[in-house]
Length: 299
Image (cartoon, rainbow, N blue to C red; front, side, top):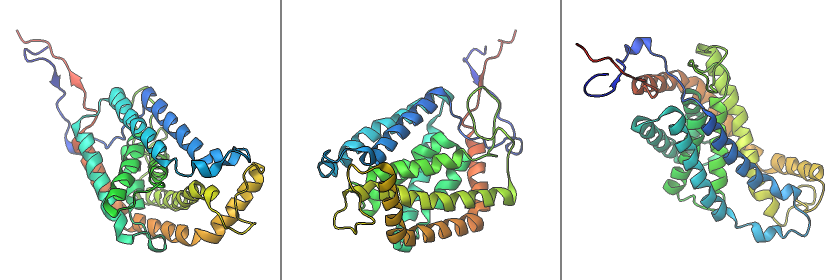
């Protein structure tokens, strides 16, 4: 070992390094599974609640969900640091991308579903991996809510939903893989070029519609005054309520979800090559998983 202690491995030339997604270790998988389980319960519990459960009394429980979500997000970050040793560079990149996503969201202001931040979230999750992507999606929605004044009972649900969107992008096949025993995306070899762009565009379209559908589930059970065919009926069988929910989505939000999907596809195809190249270049230069080596002292 050198007299000054461990020395970092000499960096390879940028041309020979690959942009590697931040890998998922066992701690990261456990933290993500816990956060996702909490999210599924928060969204879906009214469907299995009994008719006398007093749903209206729980309509304003979002602050409690938000209070539970923040330490769970922190747990994902800490678990990822423990697994792969993220440093200040990764945290700085998280901040930059979250700020960019928050700045993009007001450009459409949600008008007719025009939300340009979706394509950036999908591409970032693709390059940086599912764990990093989940935290990025949640933090971006939190920052954009503060920026636009969109703080309300829907905010923690938006954070969860966008986190799932970014995490799913990181789990798509054909991402950059790296050797090691940990769970990692991209085991089957990388997908690049037009195939990757169309893959991301298709995923962006599907996730844009699913995002709106999941967010509908957050508020639909508590809405009153709806027509019988689309209203939630506490205590009814899950299948019947889901049928009414589908009818509700078709009648209300599809006009926003489809334009969001179209905008995401168009931006992914038009700007995807440049954004992916920039993200991968930044990831290579950051070298998040650079190894530390020990050298024998010279005689």
